Amino acid sequence: MPNGSHVAFYKDALYADHQVARHLTGAFRITFDDGRFTMHVQLTAAQTSIPAFLEPGILRAIPARVHPDALVLWTYETFPFGMTLDYERKFSYYVAATPDGGTKPPDPPPRGDAL
Image 1 (cartoon, one colour):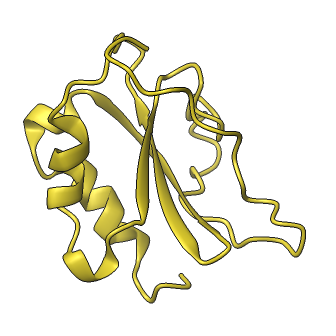
Image 2: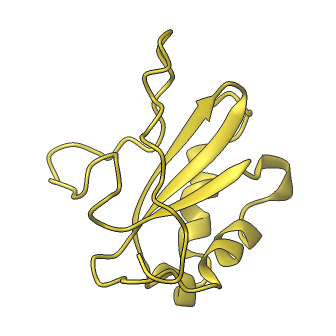
């Protein structure tokens, strides 16, 4: 990846704390856009709000030298990189950008207590 890290750092961070992991599907996507590194994470279908401890819990588990510039938590339905696994192909955690910036997702929903 452009920052010299490996997707395993980020995948492991989702499962490092079981209190955090139970709110996540495990699906995430890493994007690099204009030198900015963003990690997008999908919440479980049962999540109707974002507990305050999720973002710091995920970030705490990622080594400081490879921290994302931003962490975006998406509801199950709004995750812009595919909602489910079909067991016929692996989920793509990182896709290199195309010259037209083809990996940029839509803007995240506004943050608030309820999603």
